[in-house]
Amino acid sequence: MEFHSAMQISHENLNRTDYDLFILAAGYELRSVYLAVDFSIKADVKLALAFEEKSKESQRRNNDVLLIGKGFDFMTFSGEQSVEMSPIFSQLSQGSEKEELFILVDYSSMTKVWYSGILNFLIRDETLRKKLTVHFSYTPAIYNEPKKAGPVRFNKLISFPSGKPADSNKPTALIIGLGLDYSRSEFLLKNIKPELTTLLYADPSNDIKYVERVFQNNQEIIEQTGVRNLFSFPLDNLDRTNEILTDLCLSLRSRYNVIVAPIGPKTLTLLALLLAARYPDISVVRISQGSGASIFERTPCCKPLVYSVEFLPEEGD
Image 1 (cartoon, helix red, strand yellow):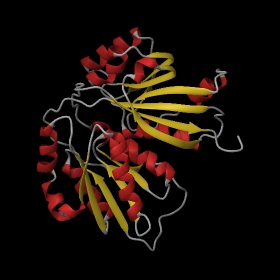
Image 2 (cartoon, rainbow, N blue to C red):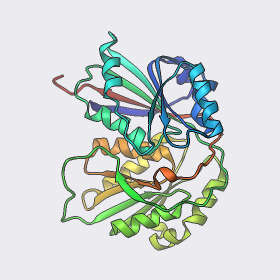
Image 3 (cartoon, rainbow, N blue to C red):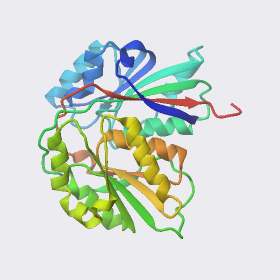
Image 4 (cartoon, rainbow, N blue to C red):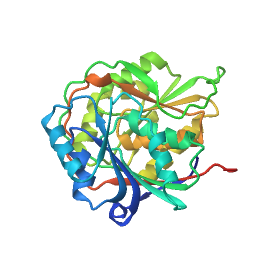
C-alpha cells in the first residue's frame, strides 16, 4: 500500500469511530488496558497481542481477565518476534464490502518490533484493495524513577528495508532520540561510528522530572555532541515533532547516510518509521536489551496522543 497522509487528531475521535479492527498489547503495564477499559471503543474485531515473556506477573493476569471480558481474542508472541499480520488483514479486507476500513492500534505497551511490523506490513502488502485509515494511539505514562538498565545486546533495522545498500561515498549521520538509558546511546556511537551525531529530546514533556533525568543521564553524550546539534520537540504535538524530524533528516540525506535511533519516546519512533516509508534511504534502528529487560510500571498520566495515517491501494490495483 502507499502512504497517503498523516495528522494528529483528538483522542475524542476514539469514541466516535466505528473500527473494523482494534489491536493492542496484552502486557503487565496498567496502561496496556487503558483504552479498552476507560474508553468506549467500538470495533468489529478486537485483538490482543500477548507477550510470551513475564506472563506470570499479577498485573498481567489481571489485564488478561479484563481484556477477555471486553471480547478480545489473543495471539501470543515474544516481544522480540515480528508479528505476522497477513492472515488478519486479508480476512478483514475480504470479509468486508466497505470501501474504507478503520483500524485502531494502541502501541503504548508494544515493543518497537511489534508496531514497526504492523506498519511495515501495510507498506509491503499489495493485496489490500481498500483505503485504510489507521489510528495509532499512544498513552503517556506517569514518570517514575527508572531501574538500573541491563546491558544492550543488539541493534536492529526496523524501518521498511529499501533493498538498496547505503551509499559508500557518503558518511553516516546518526540522529538519536534520547531516553533515560545512556548505555544505548553509547552502544550506538561505538558501533555505528557516525561522522555527525544529532540529539533529540522531548521538551515539553508530561513531567519536567523526565526532562531533567534525560539531561542528567545523557550529560556526557550531550557535551560530546554540542548544543548546536541538540534539538527539542514537544511530546504532545505530533505534527510539530514530525516537522522537526522531517526537516532535520531531509537537510542531511543529500550528504549523509541517515540513521534514526529513537530510544525514547515511542511517538518519535512511529514518526521516524513513517518518514522512512516516504524516504526509504533513511534507516530506523531499534536498540534492545532483549527479552530480559526489567519490569517497569507504566501508569497512564494523561489522554492518548492519536496519529491518523491514511494508506491507499497502490496504483494499478
